[in-house]
Image (cartoon, rainbow, N blue to C red; front, top):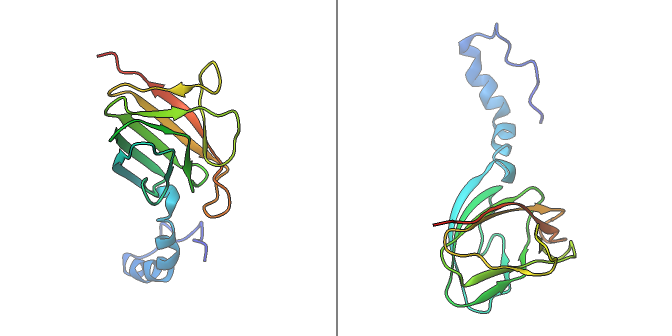
Length: 155
């Protein structure tokens, strides 16, 4: 069901609103999908980890703020199972987790804005990077994660 653009009108009586809400409840509840969710996660990355999965180690939010700590050295190469438009904003709490840049735009790889291409982003404490999923469909294709911005901590 789609919500009618012209209902309720400015002339609708207040007594009619509960019936209108009940009638459209399912459509209204469906609006609480991925694209409308915001969340926060603390992520502790195990040593040697190369891939984190959305919905498992990472939240399945449309916009997620992540505080990331490494429990040992890790070179992350990808986030698996992302959905198009998902945004992950990561603030690093140590220098143990690195992101590996990729020239390919498949398999959940990181497509970072840095030169030379193919190098690692080696964040320090309190550095932040924002990544957006492009082309992912969970269970079908992972797409890739495009860097939106990064902020390097100066103190």
